[in-house]
Length: 254
Image (cartoon, rainbow, N blue to C red; front, top):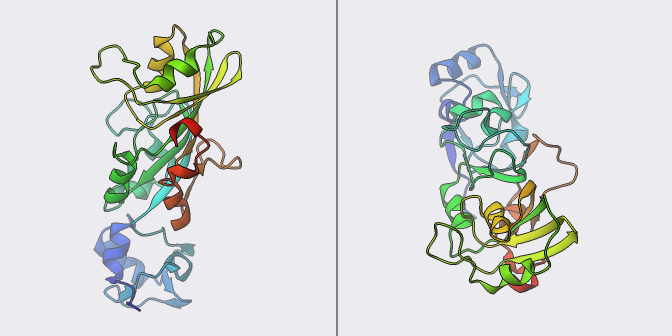
């Protein structure tokens, strides 16, 4: 059995955004850092990065933040953006302020536009991010769309054919699965992530999306008890569920 990797305490905490290495040394002198119930006296001590490190290491009495690689699920509320560069409040402002100084930095796995709510993934794991968004992965994403006008009745066939060409594009969309929930409410499962794709698909059929919510990626569902704006870290099984497309309830995409 291989031993878990070890890292200097000051480097670990600096990478997690707790301050510079000098500031971490100051925390040690203040006896503000405890490992396994004992005050840490050497900021340069190497500690094993075991899975339970947030349970073993505390800073000012609080469990240390999870180290990289980290994958979060967030219930994105309306009115926030997924980019550091767009104007307005961003999803990163819903996380602890020190997380903006984490190394490696956190990024959203794809984006939801300002008005779209629901399941959003945030990670510092570049390889995981690229696996999820890669066109070769085809990780299904499920949305519920509330529409301005009643469905015509032919939308499911149009979306499932795989020949719908959106305005300004040269490549048709991949087949998508639509389930009618109410005359003006539909659930749509996609395997792509083009710009404003759901809104543009319904626009192509003469309708308009007035509310849009994503509740599933792969076979990972947004928990009903995760409130808008709330987030939590995923465990390894949940991370794999994101890529378990064969378990999704999307018969036309199987």
